[in-house]
Length: 411
Image (cartoon, rainbow, N blue to C red):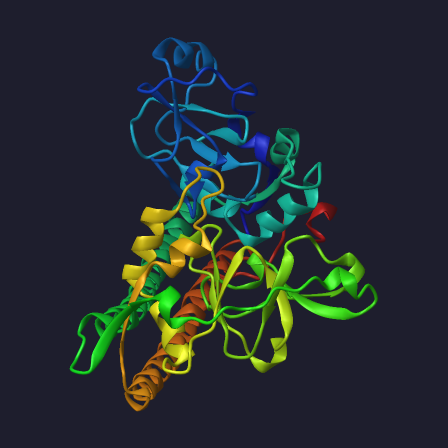
């Protein structure tokens, strides 16, 4: 506790100002113009930005030019994202970013970066936003943020501890993310091989040749009868499971609610087809209704419908959809185009069932591993928050936990 004092942020910074309020004219090749999306997880992302002319850049930065060691802090969208400028690049910043120039005689810029990225400040920032929706954190509020300031040697000691801890966390997170990626790729590779490495007794037909015609309905004709409606967003593109289905009365049915689905049908969203919104209809949704934005696949008696489901998850099918889709802002394929895709399968229903069972088992194991790795990643994120909390509550300096003296911290 000794020698730690509470200060307002603008008392320990030489400048706290927002970026350019109006969007300047962009050019194809020029000086980077960064916004809030370019600051993430404590780093500046040098991609996905617009460019401005050198002349405009000089005009915009004549009074507040970003320099090495300065801090960029997001005020719009994701609050509490701060990064130290570590690259000697020329750039300007949009109003969604706050530029902070630290008084280095009293404050270590990396100490401030960690403080701004702490969960404590994120809660404080969220509570202070001035509007709904995307929201906007007023730069005046940022200047008023309370911060506990220890001596510079103590700040440097804490920064060293945090950097070492975060490096270990980042390494563990990278490993978990790679393991997650590997588990997905292993399943995708095996799945692709099933349909590529055709054995004896296999045949190839178009989807149109192996499917039966499905029914259309008009729920509005039964005005007071409830039904479950599956719109395009009802299928989770990651898990391939149906989520957020809507229960409606017939009179409230949207015009796209026209396709009847039955147990074991496969639905595939033809809108933005590369999102691969594919799902098997379970008994819960038997004889319910899906959007015309889906193609409903129901196989003939010689083909296992689950095998059709897995075929739609293959890399090769997805690539064909990518080539066929039309429309820049609302890409889509037609049911007829999907019907024209060729599928290979064994003639033997018994062999089909064996393949499906193997894929079911591998899919279940893959999902189990993915859940473990995702939990590991979440745990590491929570550990990072915990370490930051300890840094600014006194636990990394062996003292009693303390908080900046302000009622604004009751969050």
